[in-house]
Length: 513
DNA sequence: GATCAGAGATT
DNA sequence: AATCTC
DNA sequence: GATC
Ligand SMILES: O=c1ccn([C@H]2C[C@H](O)[C@@H](COP(=O)(O)OP(=O)(O)OP(=O)(O)O)O2)c(=O)[nH]1
Ligand SMILES: [Mg+2]
Image 1 (cartoon, rainbow, N blue to C red):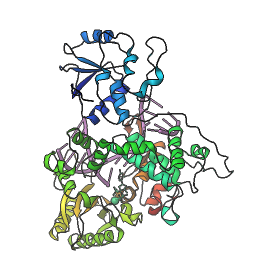
Image 2 (image 1 turned 90 degrees about the horizontal axis):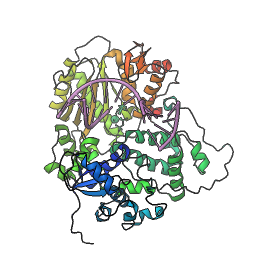
Image 3 (image 1 turned 90 degrees about the vertical axis):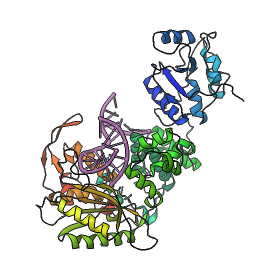
Image 4 (image 1 turned 180 degrees about the vertical axis):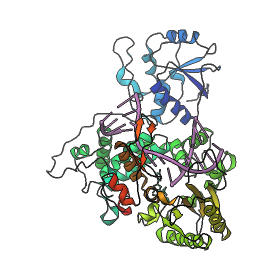
């Protein structure tokens, strides 16, 4: 079909509810439409499907829209979302001579509304798929009631719904005998990741919790009953897991992955220093490849470095290379400032066979020595001199005391490489801390991130507060803000922190959640 | 309807 | 203050 | 997306 009228490039919304508005605005970004407010003069206005032409016109009169705009039903966007591409808008245009029966117009466009047909007059039983999907970035929910065949459950086969606190349990070792539900976990992980890069943190967390529940399940899951018995898995996630078991796939994930905006966001998310807002903007500006970014995008200093080493940074580091890098840093540090205590943390301390980066915690042996500035700077300089460090990403020493820097902690994020031909550039994080914070920092920097968050959430529940600086009790919170910071507890060792929280001690390798 | 951790550095 | 990162 |  050849369209004489080109698709709108700029639209605005009239009387669309908050929830749906958010969804539509996201869709607009995705389809390259810009959304403006009433005030400017634009000729395309999207109106809620309940409005007929007359009431829409009335509403327009009392606002500051341009004189003769084209009215389009929001169903246009709803259908476009479903079809995964921006559809022609013709059939959705609202005309003056078609009063009430909004739905009759729909009929021509495509199959999506077939079922609603006639009730009386202008019944608008808009299908809820978009608005009720409780989701933003996705279109989801052809939520047909799946006919679940309930298989008989073998007694004693149910997954134990273990405690709420992940940090109280050892991470189950998948490396030894593999996880029986690997396929499911893999799919859900991908979902979680995609939700994260599309700025849906809450949902990403929900998937991670479900993943952890699955990891703890030591036998292959077979029945729908079993699935629902898992903590943090209810209707929606249970359906998805069941679908994976039955079909070995997940339609929603495939649909997600095939969206070019999601794929592009994923690509851009691999640039160190570019987060959800930046990648979203880049996409909106029409960039699609890393070369687009190199040539045309506005990049911060760190993003330039992230782009320069895109492949290197996204490669895992074999454990033995981390060991060699650690050795270089330790030796150099000992030459420059004798008496430093250093521990390589992160995934390395958790004994992972490969690591995403190198995380090194640094302090003085015995307390008191607040002039950390006399340590970080010389060490960094020396590491640069031997051409081990190649670039700075975050450097406390460079930015001379930024806004009210009361913290004694100092952070250096940079780039290093072994002095051997063929060595890749690696991300290295050095954190300098006062000795009295050693245990809490060690705990923090060892992670995993999920483990930390679980433990911190537990602390909060106990009216305590846990960070890399310390563990406090008697914390009084009023909503979000702390009324009372509480008092710092004496935490000489990691074990002591577990004790305060009534947790069994877990060695680093058991914190790999 | 709020929460999902808490903090440092850059922009 | 928003954004990104650990 | 689950939980309280
Ligand atoms: O959001 C985060 C990220 C990290 N960390 C802590 C735990 C983590 O173990 C450590 C180092 O971070 P990194 O990103 O290097 O994670 P990792 O556990 O070392 O994994 P990777 O192998 O990807 O480096 O910092 C957090 O507390 N919160
Ligand atoms: Mg790491």
